[in-house]
Amino acid sequence: MVDKILCFHLYVYDDINYLNNLAYKFHIECLKHYSHVFNKACFNISVENVENEEIIKQVKKDLIDCNFNNIEIITTINDAYCEVNTFKYFVLDRLETLNSLVFFGHTKGLMNVIDGINYPENILHWIYTMYYFNLEDFIVNDMIKRLIFSYSGIKNTFYGTLRTFVDNFKKSFYPGTFYWINPMKLYEDIKNRKIIIPKICNRNFCEELPYVYENEANAYNGLACYLNKEVSDIYLYNDNDWNFISTHLNGGENEYYNYLYNKLREKI
Image (tube, rainbow, N blue to C red; front, side):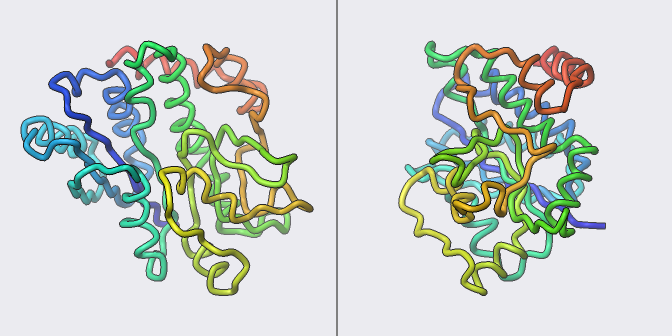
């Protein structure tokens, strides 16, 4: 059995209506639904206002009520680096001793569903897709094969969904920044000087971290996704056809995807 840890950045902006945010409530439902996947969950509640004690207390309760087997919760002051701080604390600073696969996520879409510019339902589908195509049992099994075993002779460090290629297929990333990572392999590749971890200099660090495996000769170097499906030609902030996207990502079938989305959506 392979141990799996959730590393999650939960941003709390300073607003009395925070707990009614559609994206927040949807994240909680998704976390609750997939809590069984993990041996441990590590959360950083990153707040704008530490004096907002009632909301912080409720957020902690919401996380505990997700029923994770083991949970670690810290509270920090949010700054310009946002989720990078969480990744550094729970992953990079522990890289030498981590012996579990890590799934990294954050409260994607909190501001997008209320900014009046984006399409809230589209954002919710984007959020859901990052959970579904990373944490469904058949996806987790595929992820373990690709990150632990030498899958078709290829050894990977990252695994995610909605993969997008850039710079003429020299490198790629996972839009929304939800992905699995094998920290043991990342550590070995650093130690053996196969890659160099860049200095943290902006909030995009986590999203761009997979770029360390940039390879002009091999577009799939170090990074994997289910069925090798990518979405490089789709702008995810548009009002997208998620029937088409989910069918594409799943290789032709999306009935359960739609069923589960509607079930979770009804709860918020």
